[in-house]
Length: 250
Image (tube, rainbow, N blue to C red; front, side):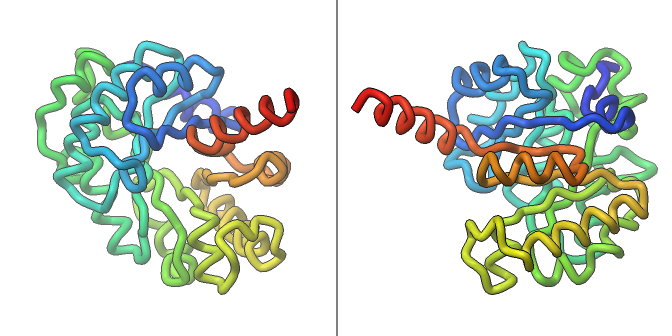
């Protein structure tokens, strides 16, 4: 089966960077994937598109060295199965609040005997290889999002879920849950919560990823040892670069 390069980078304790596609456009996904990212995440939670649009984006990403990831819209066996069958090599699942949520997520991502994923990965074979079924459980990444007070309080139990590879921190929603503005990325309370989650994951041998709303935050997350950092969405980066060019020419 094709290597999951993120696992290799994590094992080498090297930072992995993921692009983030929230617009339902395969060409845009391909361009981002050619920008040097280690992975590109197709976002079905906040992206205004469905699985039908995600498929060509995954195909476009798969034509590049970047690992195709998805953020599913919810903790749904049916949706997660379809996204994995379509060739996603890892799933970020939002709103994991309890160990039971995490277990349900892991089971959706794994074939029996570990899970309840149904067999039928038509495109998974094309991207992963003929031995996809044999190695899928050990190759595909499972990252549970911690972004609520409940999820934060239950983080240790969530991280102890067997075969869950790690967590992905949603800092904006977590900030809101802490009574802060969604972009309060420099607030001490948010950063203490992030440090706590990272320490828990390290203690339990799990990976940690995070969305960084600014480049300053991305650099800070790199500095504290995050495994995976997303330095902004496609929309944010296009807008920021457009504004920079306009400002320079004004």
